[in-house]
Amino acid sequence: MHPIVSDRRRLALYLGVWLLIGLMVAGLLSLLLPLDATQAMSFALPLALVYASICLSAWWVCRAVPLGGEFWRTAGSLTGAALQSVGGWVAAGALWSAVLRVNHVFPAERVVAFEALGILFLAGLPLYAMSLVVHYLILAFEASREAERRALESQVTAREAELRALRAQLNPHFLFNSLNSINALVGTEPELARRMCESLGDFLRRTLALGARDAVTLDDELALVDRYLDIERVRFGERCRVTRDITSDARGCQVPPLLLQPLVENAIKHGIAARLEGGNVHLAAMRDGGTLVLMVENDIDEDSPARPGEGVGLENVRRRLRALAGREARLDAERVDGRFRVTLTLPAVGTEVAPVAPAGAGREGRS
Image (cartoon, rainbow, N blue to C red; front, top):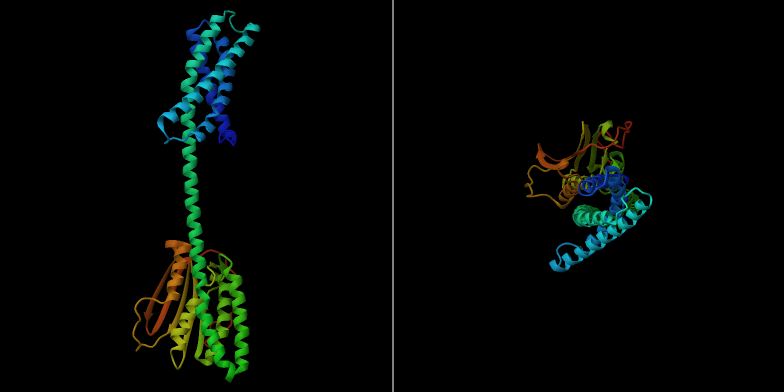
């Protein structure tokens, strides 16, 4: 549909401009011909609206003859369209002048009518040229908006593809470890192997449910972490100790799904599995104004050498935060007083919820 006709405000503005043009043509006629103001306006104003509708055809002409093609072919096509449009306007002017003469509104002398039609012809060519310019500008503007829209869609598609790829990397490593643990328990402790299979199935079901969403509450994310810790409890028993410090105003905040599990998995891998005596993993969350701060800490062996760089889990979380929130979110990792600390800082989106005491909250113990 024509972009001017499809919008009432644009159409009203367009017709208003053409009425002004009609007044200008009427003034020109009254200056050059023996016509008073009433006669000139009676002749020019209706014809201005007629030509306004004719000039709308420039939209399809501009679409059919884009700029940038062969010069002479483009010029010929546009000239032909202009002559046809002006010819139609002059023909309409001839009919209208005849109607006005019959009703004694226009002078009876035909020479006046012929001269008025000549003025219409001379005025019609630049007016149609202006219409072509306006419609080419509209096309350029729409092309720019379409290019911008496609660029945004491409960015969104690329971001979603990256997030899907990053989510797909979350489970395999943990799944392989769990299956190896189940395999090791089947022969010696089949009951523990059965419990671990049940916990693993529950964890994977929740992972699929939460992973399909764009965001979840921190409470939902912590519930998923609890299911993961149920599995690790079977593996490590009393060696796995977890403490929490979760403020109530942080629980309702929205976070990307599957954000904490790889960090907790990383903490257990390096802070518990690698230590004969096991260790403690500490989870903390607080809301500071418009910022949500999440922290995962684990014990480390001070005598073990610091590893250069970061593991896949930390880099995965860092890339997800960058894709979701850009510069508004960040991940910091550091060794502090015999502990390894990962701190996530991201926008606090969501509302407060009533305090809920999760399993093992605020105390050390097997979790």
